[in-house]
Length: 151
Image 1 (tube, one colour):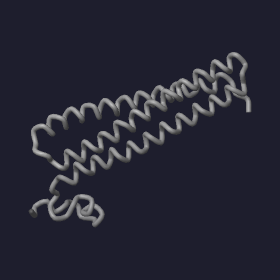
Image 2 (image 1 turned 90 degrees about the vertical axis):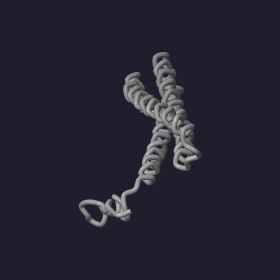
Image 3 (image 1 turned 90 degrees about the horizontal axis):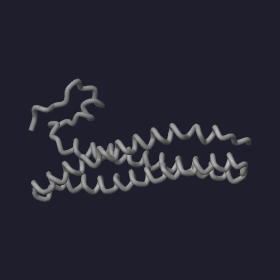
Image 4 (image 1 turned 45 degrees about the vertical axis):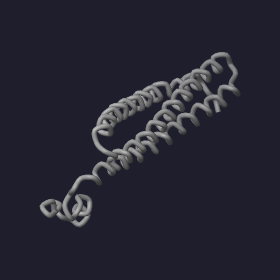
């Protein structure tokens, strides 16, 4: 397989956009942490808030790992291009493989974080009263509107 300088260069825009998306997720979480911080100090040991805080700790760690492996992938791409430029093709292929593995690892962390974020939303929704029959159950049963009038 021939590796030209354009091959790792193709990853530059993808990694850059991925890092931008990761940064946006981090900023959204930071905002949520600030909101929960004030709620935590206002309410007395609300178990829902404690579960959300635990979830956020895990998600922030995942985002840190996502960003770290994304940056590592970017660095490997730059090193690969440098090696191709200096005609060290065997080393360039290995470094490019490491770049792809780093990018894959970053994406796997991203997938795990997405799953946890949907669980966090489910956790918040579980705290809301939807009546005797929940919204999801109503939708699955084919009801047009959930029974929200019963307490």
